[in-house]
Length: 113
Length: 114
Image 1 (cartoon, chains in turn cyan, yellow):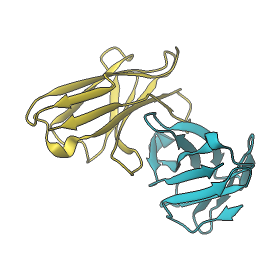
Image 2 (cartoon, rainbow over the protein chains, first blue to last red; image 1 turned 180 degrees about the horizontal axis):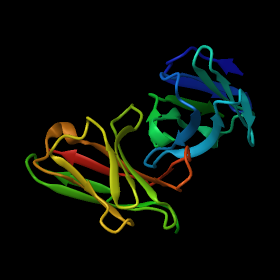
Image 3 (cartoon, each protein chain N blue to C red; image 1 turned 90 degrees about the vertical axis):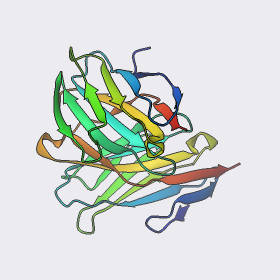
């Protein structure tokens, strides 16, 4: 796998390796966090979410880690596949009733066969 | 298809013209959102509806932009007197009534202002 620094716009990994995408969020009052995947020509698609009372959540091949102390979120993709190539956005949700979702700038993931 | 649909997929217009986009959310979703996305950036929040009520508007939404959701189902976003800086992907999303719910996005309308 390969770990990248914050705000790096692209990540290139070998097929079968693990990917780690990092994100810094802005509002300490945010209580819900989501990772979205966006393929070319499509809208963002939900991958996994986590609430602020948790620090880890696992899905199918994906894991999200939340560190509220440093306002950091990461997405881990196990056994990365060519179909994982896309732009990944972290998003935070806050505001009255939690209605407004704010997106980060995104990381483009390239998977090399 | 029961996802969020947007029409048109692409729109090319001349500066100064008015354009209108339509969004049909997932039928049981009460909340509807409009976002704008430029190349290489994440979606930016524009406005949000709970049923037919427009509850929040971003400062990004100038007075040339207006959105409606007259019957609490489909929504329209109109841009008057378009400017080249309006060129972007306009995304619509919907979600159920529960708080902190994930968004379901349509494929967007790509606007090019010449």
